[in-house]
Each structure stands twice: as structure tokens, then as C-alpha cells.
Length: 296
Image (tube, rainbow, N blue to C red; front, side, top):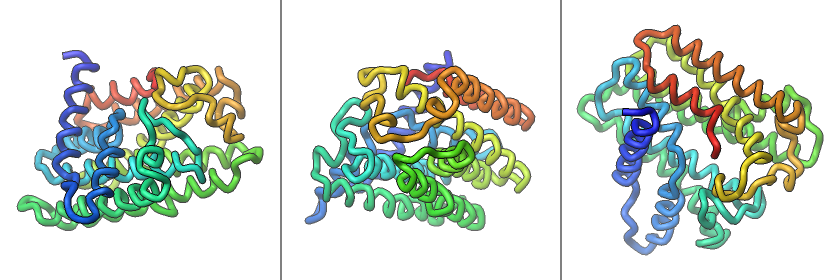
């Protein structure tokens, strides 16, 4: 089976997990469940839960305890996109080729849908404690990582600095800081949680954090590149949005070719670090490599 076929198979498995953990749209508040489902099931690469499961299995994990964390991770990622698209933030009308949540459900419900996904992510992850084969200490550690990397010391922290400095010229060190938190933190969280739940030692968990940090930065640089080289039809969202929002990016900072070279360098370093671990995971290495050549 080719890498693309394997990736498609894994994506479909993740989609089934997401459906399993979504709340049923019922009760007086069912509108918010519908908005959550619309947002979460809009497609996408499902990169973060995929990285989590691959890391979990690489370190010998075999149980279903990783599944609620995979769903929680994608809920948190999705909520961040829902809020990013709001008029007060990036003000985008399209995401993944269809209308954004606030356009379909209204700005008020878009805010609440994001809030609901974030809160429900932790409800979902906490169900791992009830699984018969769960190691509660590992689950607790995974919860800590999930919370910290999504919060003020992770994704939200990076977003705060990004929003605060929009329209201003940003130093390269600050741009790296924003990217490592805004994009890299959730990718780090995914791979660290996979390792922790599988029982990996602290040294290996930190190695995965290092790999993920490089992957996250390379992934965001590639986003910058695609924003100026791709099309709205391919990306499924508006292009030149960074220019519209007057944001400093790797392309405006270093130039297009230098940005491409940096993304490739970081990805190769990440793969080399991953290859130093045992046992090897060929699919995971191919997945990381594919990120710098993606078209959307």
C-alpha cells in the first residue's frame, strides 16, 4: 500500500473516532451540537491526531486509551480555527472549501461553537480515566500536557502575541516565538501525549517534543509559502490573507526561496531525530516529510 493510501486509511479511521465522540444534537441546546459537528467534520488533514496515534504505536501502545485524546486534540485545533475565522480575528468566509462556522450560524454561535469544542475536548479526554486498561498516572500527565500546550504557555499565548503585533514589523525571533506557540504547541502536544500514554520515558518524550517543535515550525512556514504561491481553489480558503491582515511572515521576512529552504531544513532535522529512535516508524517519517511538499 502506498503512503497516500495509508494516509487516507488512517484519516478515515480518525474520522470514525471523531464521530464516536461527538455529542448527539439533542435537547434545547442542540443548535450548538450541530455547529460543533459542522466545524469538526469539515475535513482537513487530521494531522495532529494522526501524529498522536503514530507516536503512541511507535512506543508500543496498543489500547484504545489514545482515542479520546485524539478526538480532544482535533476539537481543540478546530475551535482555534473557528475563532481564527471570526470577524474580530482574520475575518475569513471560507475554510476547507466551504463557508466558515460564523457565516453559517452567526457570529454569536461561532464564538459559542469554539467555546463548546474547547470545553468538550477536555470532557472527552477525561473519559480515558474510565477505560479499564487506563494507567491513570499516564492519563493525568497527558491531560496536563494537553491543557498547557493549548493555553497561555502554548497556542493561545502565541495567538495573543500574533494579534497584538498585527500591522507592525516583527523581528525574526518574535516571529519564531509566535509560530512555535501558535502552531507548534499543539503538534508538540500530540506527539508528547502519544509517547506518554504508551509509557515512554521522559527522555524519549522530550525527544518527541523536539521533533514536533521542528515539524510545527516547518508546517507554519509552509503555510506562509502557500499563502502566496497557491490558489483559493486548492487551499479551500482565501489566499494572500497574511498580506490583507498586514502580518509579518517567513516569506516577507526572509523571502520565498529562503523560506522554502528553512522549511526543508527543519523537516530534515526532525526526520533525522526521529530516525535516531527505536523502533522506527516508516509511515511517521514519510508523514513528516510530506509536510514540506504539501500543496494545501
